[in-house]
Length: 199
Image (cartoon, rainbow, N blue to C red; front, side, top):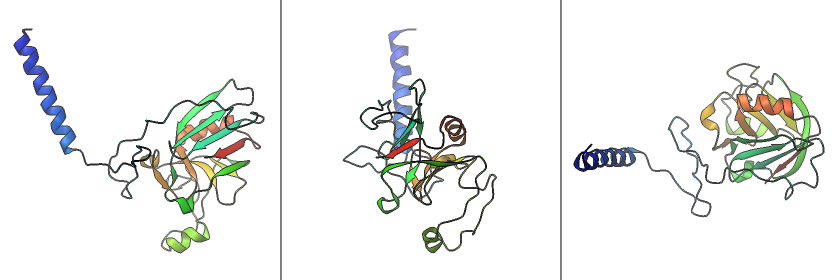
């Protein structure tokens, strides 16, 4: 291929790429963290924040890994899991609460494992959204997906979701959401008593 043909091909690729970028909707950026903020309209495609989605060591966060340890980093929207013997480490993208007032931070633990969760809106959720149903049983319409890990904090869970557009976003009413295949894997790894820290 001649140099002129290569230049022409590269120029066309550059022009096509630029046109695609111009046609992409702008995303709001948090100037302090560089993370993409979530749109309320979940039907729009967005780029996920992966800039701070990286492996971490458990030691800065836990004094030990007895019963296993789960760290949820709300800024990077990632859940980290370490097994008790530290032979297993998992890193999952997650959804996090929509707003600061829905966010709970600190230490808790898994107190119940639910293999087929049903869902009831909390009183606060029902007040904000009176049109929501009072109860949704297990299945594809359930906001808790296919598995749920209950925490010591009332109404707070780590659970799956059938709406995969929520992962990587501020999109929950307080809980931490995972893809169903990830919560199913974490469900098998975690146990009642697993330490949980949300930062």
